[in-house]
Structure formats: structure tokens, C-alpha cells
Image 1: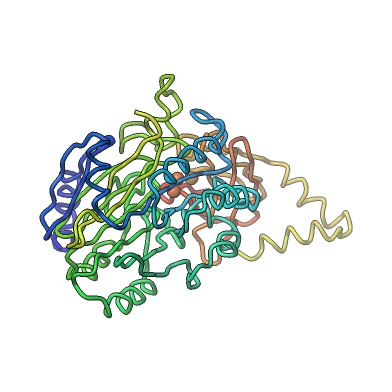
Image 2 (image 1 turned 45 degrees about the vertical axis):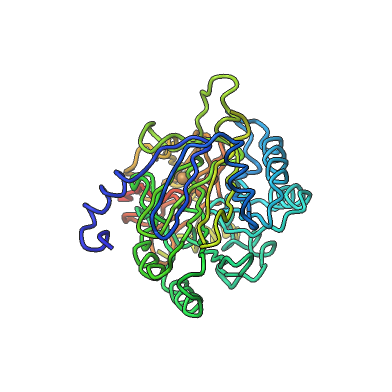
Length: 311
Length: 112
Ligand SMILES: [Cu+2]
Ligand SMILES: [Fe+2]
Ligand SMILES: [Fe+2]
């Protein structure tokens, strides 16, 4: 990884590779060669309908948030779940910040609403979910296969899914952190998989450096990429930055998802990363939504299409 | 560092007024840190021993205040908009802290 050899160069390279995209940008990774095409939603539907396996990526529901530009994220969560159900997904990945303030009532409300959608859902913790009492209220509710620390893996539809936690034990002045314990887990977990197995890694904070001054990246992501290097198709799904972003590095496709609650500014475009409060009327739902991920070919390629609530 | 909690416990235990009075008088000094735009204002604050520092979150994002010392000298709960955290610095020293939700947010209190 050139990130290791030349950290500064690698960072610049990462920024150059960053692609800004609105809805309907479809990435496929076939045989390690990424191709992108802008699709109308009909075309996107037709293409993904060929695949037998699809799932949904939702993130940053932030129940408990109640300010501009979205005084009631429950409504937009419900709309997002309606959209998710319309895709008839095999499962849903929630990449964290389920709640705004880690409060039990927020967790209860979120799970009540999300469970109502009757989609099998797997959760990764966001920093807003584990900020109090070592994450007690998160881990009490989302133990599905999780070890202490909230990381786990499972297989479905021929895809190997790995959930990582990069939001605990954050250090002052640093970005997200996976840590040695999870690296060991991952190394063992991946050892038994063939290189042709499609891998999906999901975690809250982006697993590549999006914007270091705002902490939008993960300190030890280069180590993670080394463990994933031998796999032909790796899809990384993250939240935290409340906007879609994509990057391709070798066989690894990185994607972030929108929030269902409020959008955040493009990196460095505003003094801070807080919610975009001054949205023109009618713009909010263009910046909120989910990702649909589907297996478009039989060779393990996964396509990620963002699906905003409007527009 | 462990002198801080012990002094607080003394006050709470309701010891004879003669013993408590000088501490109580010093604790009346207060200083403010404002949290806004994912930052602490001022980032560095100098206070006299015994000063109570009050952090107020004026941002529309929740933040907290977590000592970087090991063991931690203080740690606030998560502070939503308008919420407040206060801590009384009895002993001289430099106390660095950060926001565990946004670790790039850093500040320090210099007591002396
Ligand atoms: Cu913060
Ligand atoms: Fe978030
Ligand atoms: Fe987050």
C-alpha cells in the first residue's frame, strides 16, 4: 500500500481519488477493474434485478436529534425504511449513530421503528451510540453474534460480512481506530475464506482518510487493507459523514452512505462538520436516504447505488 | 490528581464549618468555556486553584469534555445543546481534555 510508504503522498492520492457523486452512480467491480456509469433509476433497477442477492445500507438515523434542518428524524427514518422495503432486501446493515445521545429511550424508539420494517438488520456502533457507560445501552440491545467490543462476522448470499468497531477508545487528536484485538479477529476470520469470496466490511467511521482535520478517517486502515489485499471483491460501507462518497483502491471499493436524519457539509467546506442548517426549502430529502447494494454478476461484483428520499 | 475527588467528598460529608469555609470561599471563583462550531473557546484557559470551570455547549451538535490524563481527572456526560458541565480544579497543574465524540476537539485548563 503506498499509504504506508509515503503517508503524505498517500493522503493526497486518496483525496484525488475521491469522487463526488449524487444519486444513481453505479459502481461495479468486476475482476478488479472498477467501472462506473451514471444510471437513471429504471436502468439501475433493471441491472440490479438480474442479481439474486441484494441488501440495504442505512446509517446515522440519529434518533433524538430535533433541530434544523430536520426537527423530526423519525419521519425521515420511516420514509427511508419504506424505501428499503420496496427493494425487498435480504438484509439491512446499519452503520451506526442509531441514536443522537446514547439514551435508552432513543435506542428503544429506533429499534421499535426499525424492527417494524421486518428486515433482518445488523448494526455497527457509531460514536453517538457508545459515548456513555462503555456503550452499555448499545451492547445490551445489539449482541447478535457480537463479541465484547461489537465486532462480528456472518455469511449470507455467498457474501462474507464483517462488522468492525472503529469508534471506541478514540484518542485526542486522532481519527477512528480499529485496534489490535479486532485485527487479530479479522486475520483469523478471513483465513478460512477463499480469495473469490465477496467481502463486505462495514463500520461507522470511514475506513479511508476522507478529511483528517475533522477526524473523518481511521488511523489503522492501512493494516486493514493489507488483510483484505488477497480478495478479489471487497466492498467497504461506512457512515458518519452524512453524505455519499466513493473511492476505489485496487480491488477495494469504499462507499459511505447518507444519513436518514440530517446532512453534513462536504469536507472542509464549512467551519465545522455540524448539520447543514440553512438548506433551501425542499432540499432536505435530496440529501437523506439509503444505499442499495446488489450482486449484479455471478463473479462476486457488488454494485452500490445511493437512493435519496427525493430527487 | 486524586486530591480533587477527595476534597469534593469532604465538602459533601458536611465536616465542621471551620474546616470547610476556606475551601467554599475559593470554590466561588468561576470561569467559562463555550463549546461551539466543534471547538472550545478559549482552547486554553488559565485559572487560580479552587476555580470552578463551567463548559456550556452552544453548538447544535452534542459534545463532551474528557480529561486525557490517566486516570482521567474528569469526564462529563454527553452534553446536548445548552447543557452545562462544571468541574472544580483544586490542585495546580495542566489539565488537557478532548471531546470523545470529535477527538480533534482539544482544550486545556492551566491551574496555577
Ligand atoms: Cu464534540
Ligand atoms: Fe452521525
Ligand atoms: Fe458519527
